Length: 220
Ligand SMILES: [Ca+2]
Image (cartoon, rainbow, N blue to C red):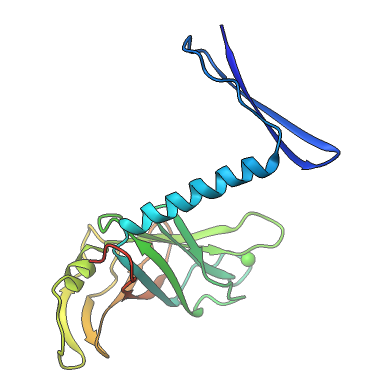
């Protein structure tokens, strides 16, 4: 015998949306009827607040990615492209503004992510913005955050400005176009990265990683 839970979300006095969820379990499920939208909204609010608190418990800090510029990017319109960058870290996704008709765009934009798992790579995708069709891809790249997190965990302090903490060379296993340096700059640890885009005929993107400690989080 099937049991049903009825959820009624009342968005206006004239419009009732009824959803029912069925369970084939023979255990007796209580038949709950939410006729009050306020009750239902509160349930969502409480569960999202709990989720936010538990998320912060696992957060190491904030990764701020400065998306600096693209160099010699692919042409996706008649003679140029309208490029923008999408960055993804786990389920977080952020994008830069569109720079019109320029295959050497200067974005100079900061995009910030909360970091919970240092093993998750940062993914970068470049798109050409189009008004009347789906945006075209202009290549992608993956960034391993582990060396940067390792450098942050060294608990360094008071180094001379510009000191190189570590160097990561380009290899088959990464998307680096040239050597990437993790440096001590203005009392912070910064990594500059020049990415050679994959799955495209040409193009490089320069980014910089910075770190911001988040009070109340687990920390590094
Ligand atoms: Ca376009």
